[in-house]
Amino acid sequence: MGKILIVTGGSKGIGKGIIEAYLAEDYQIFSISRSENHNLLNVNQFKYDLSKTDGIKNLLIELFKNIKSNEVEKITLINNAGTVGQIAKIEDINEIENTLKLNTIAPLIINSTFLALTQNWKAKKHIINISSGAAYKPYSGWTVYCASKAAIDMMTKTIALEQDEVENGAKIIAIYPGVVDTEMQAEIRKSDKANFTSIDRFLDLKTNNALANATTVGKQIFDLDQSNIANGSLVRVKE
Image (cartoon, rainbow, N blue to C red; front, side, top):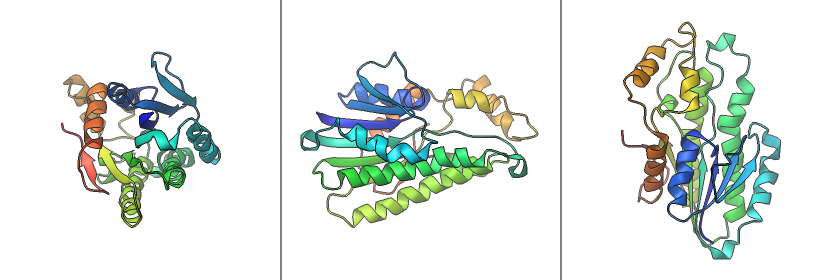
């Protein structure tokens, strides 16, 4: 069994790029996503909406039944699934809860369950949380998204402290992938400027072909997973 990857939101975008990178390095892949991608071969796909947080723990317990812990030398969990949610001034947003469930509560539950299920494993354990520059840079119209990603960063740093205190603890980092050419970016570009005053920057990135490629970003994330970056680090991928 050797090397294992568990990734959320793996059916498209950055998640698909991540899967391609790890498949090329002979990892066994488990993907959790709202939709399946039938073009992804040799991937164990679990179809699940992670905004339905009540069922996440049991889903992971079922997933782990496919893994023989004594045969694993390394296991990496990547919390990639996320949404920008409704783009508007905070007083006009009416879907706060689902955005926070997917972006923040789901990773908290997944990290908690993953660490509980692997706490006695001898394997090397890594967690990567996909964050965003929006975690530290405010954007008008993105209050909920920015807040959810800021929570990811503090989650990462705090879990790292805890894992440093236990024997064979996990290494956890957060990665800022940059502005990547994905369906989420396409949706952002459809925003009304009255709701998202920074839209011109994102339109210009697309016009100037300056968006990062999901396949390239997936490979960069893989490379960071193999590096000696300190536990709890917040890392940008190379531009």
